[in-house]
Amino acid sequence: MSTSKTITFTLFITTTLLASYNAAAKATTQPLFPAILIFGDSTVDTGNNNYPSQTILRAEHVPYGIDLPSHIPKGRFSNGKLFSDIIATKFNIKQFVPPFLQPNLSDHDIVTGVCFASAGAGYDDQTSLTTQAIRVSEQPKMFKSYITRLKSIVGDKKAMKIINNALVVVSAGPNDFIVNYYDVPSWRLEYPSISGYQDFVVKRLNNFVRELYSLGCRKIVVGGLPPMGCLPIQMTAQFRNILRFCLEQENRDSVLYNQKLQKLLPQIEASLTGSKIMYSNIYDPMMDMIQNPSKYGFIETKRGCCGTGYIEASFLCNAFSPTCQNRSEFLFFDSIHPSEATYNYIGNVLDTQIRGWLKA
Image (cartoon, rainbow, N blue to C red; front, side, top):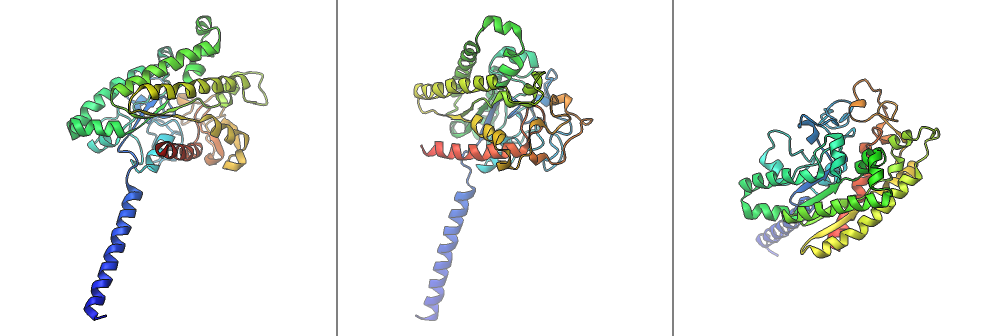
C-alpha cells in the first residue's frame, strides 16, 4: 500500500472511531427526559416553603443542607440532596431541581424542570390547612404559571412537547395520616376506619393525577407510603415504646394504602390515552434498610441525626441542636426525613424502576 493510501486509510479509521466515540458519549450524556417536574410534600420540596409567608415548616437553616456542595441550607429537609435531585442527576437532566417559587429562576431552570412541592402538604386539603403548606391541590396553579413562562421561552409547540415527555414525580401521602388522621380526633368521627380514610385520600390522588394529565403530563411516577410506623417521630408518639419498636399497625396501614394505590394507577393509565403511570415502591427498600442496616452501612435506624433524633424536625432541628458527625450511618436525618445516604439508595432503586418502566 502506498504512503498516501496508508495515511488516507489511517485518517478514515481514526475519523470513524472518533465518530463512534462521540456518538456513544452523546448517548451516555443525553438526558433520559427533557425535564423533571416535582409535586408533593417535604420528601421532594427543594425550597418552596422558604417563600410564602404563611408556611410554618421550613428547612432554610442549619443543620439542614450541611452536606450540600455549598454547605448552605436551601430548604431541603435533609443534610444533602433529596431523591428527586439524585434521579435528576442520574437521568442527566440537572444536578439540583430548583423550587418554582425561587426568585430569578433562569430560562434553563424552567426548560429543564422545577419543583412545586411544599413541606407539610397532603392530598387532603385539611392536612395542608393544619401545616399551612401549599396544598397538593393548589400546586397545579403554580404549574400553570410555569407552563405560561415555558411557552414564552420556547414557544407553545415545543413547550407542550417538553411537558408531554417530562418525568413527573408525585410524592405525598404520609402527612395525611401522621399530621391528620392519627392525630386529629374529628377525622376519626368522619372516617371510623382507616380504610375509609385511605379511600378518600386515594380518590383525591386520582383527581390530582387526572388534572396533571389535562395539563399535558404523560409520564407520571407516583410514590407510595413508606413504613410510617418506623419513622422516629411515630415511635416517640407511643410513650411506652421504650425499646423503640416500629408501630406495626401503622406499617400495616401503609401496606394497605399502597395496595390500593397499586390497583388504582393501572386503571387511571388505561383511561387516559397516551399516559404512562408508574407506582414507585418506597416501602420495601426502606423496610430492608431498617431490617438489614449493616447491608447499607447504617448503624442507627431508630432516631434521627439531629438533636435527640426523637422529635426534632423543621424549626425544632436547628443551629442549637447537636448533630451527629457520622451522618452517612444514620437512616434518618431528623425525626421524619431520611438522610442523604438513604435518599441515595432510594434514588438507585428508582433509577432501576424507571428505566425498566420505560422499556416495558
